[in-house]
Length: 75
Image 1 (tube, rainbow, N blue to C red):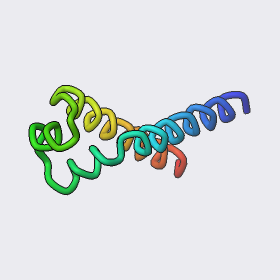
Image 2 (tube, rainbow, N blue to C red):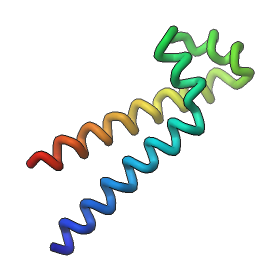
Image 3 (cartoon, one colour):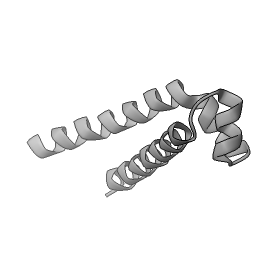
């Protein structure tokens, strides 16, 4: 039972992290989903290309983690 509670806590953490990160960076994430291009988004939003890359990469990792969590919960 301890393992089950720990797993639920970790799952909740990653889901909350994904939502919080998305809310904080939704304009850049949505821009990338509509029209990928780091330079274009960097110029449009006034942030560095490296920052845009890190935001998009972190968002993709968060989505992947959430999908893995969903799969694990069905087992």
